[in-house]
Length: 101
Image: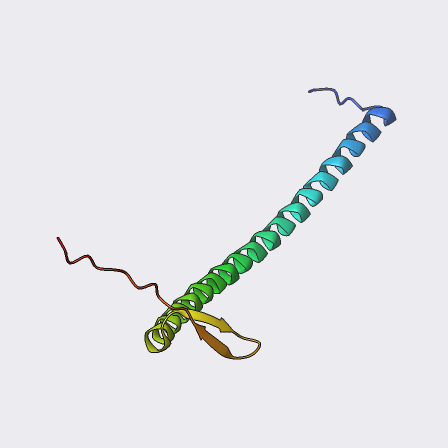
């Protein structure tokens, strides 16, 4: 039969300290991973919000371009002053057509 060997108090304490450090590290790793999960969830939420806002932006820009085209068709080219509500048409330069050719 094998004879049992007893560790010294110093060795036992060293092993307990290492085990305590491992337990602490495992706990910290778990906490870090939980925080990372929360951050990734928040990131996904922000990415979806950004995509939705981008869609709304491009839709509004298309609506603005369409409305602007309708106004240009109705009033011609010009400048609009939103503070006064006045539209100043821009006169198109008259092109001379040379019919002598």
